[in-house]
Amino acid sequence: MYLRDIKSLALAAILTISLQLLTVFEANAQQFMSQKELLATLPGSQISSIDDEDNKSKWIQAYSKNDGSKKGLVAGIWKKEKYQSTWYVEGNQWCEKWDNEKWGSGETCMKFVRIGPKQLLKYKDGVPSKNFWIIK
Image (cartoon, rainbow, N blue to C red; front, side, top):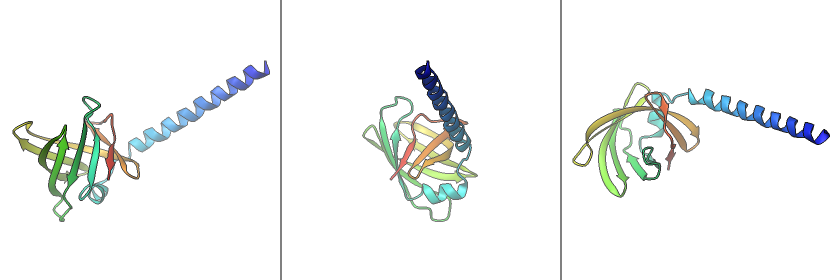
């Protein structure tokens, strides 16, 4: 009987800790990066991740440095194909715009939460991505 009580107590403690960690993560998930933080983090950096659609294709992007205009160039590789686009900051959102033969033209804006010193979690339309971005 004593062993059963210890197991029940241990399970309750594990569940409590798990719930607390989840609550902390959810609270942090709402702390989106500001325009100042975005401009201090992404321009001049190299980012890599895994495609959210197939959950396996790796991609990498290099962002030009910020020259004070809050916009710049992007050079990337996705599935071994090179591409170029532009980046800009609008409010507290990081935006990218592209126009090429392979994917046509488009534009997207997103928000980020810093989840580690070199990791960002992207939010698009309020939904977090499956894979985080790694800053190199």
